[in-house]
Image (cartoon, rainbow, N blue to C red):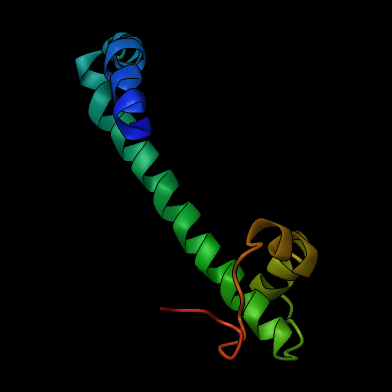
Length: 98
């Protein structure tokens, strides 16, 4: 029932507002805006995977080297990563899969 209620809210209330905002973007700019947003999402995904990889390496005892590893160690330290990915574990013995 909740899915149906939220779907109705989306279709009746939110979608018309989003379409009005979207239609404010001129046709000539839409592909450029789409490209910029897609590039941002790609960079975000790559940085997330690199941050997870570096977090796992630090947990395994690897000392971050100067450069990109040091950047992730400073800006995405263990505390930040543990807070952002609260339900995730790096230890395969603690992972739960059904």
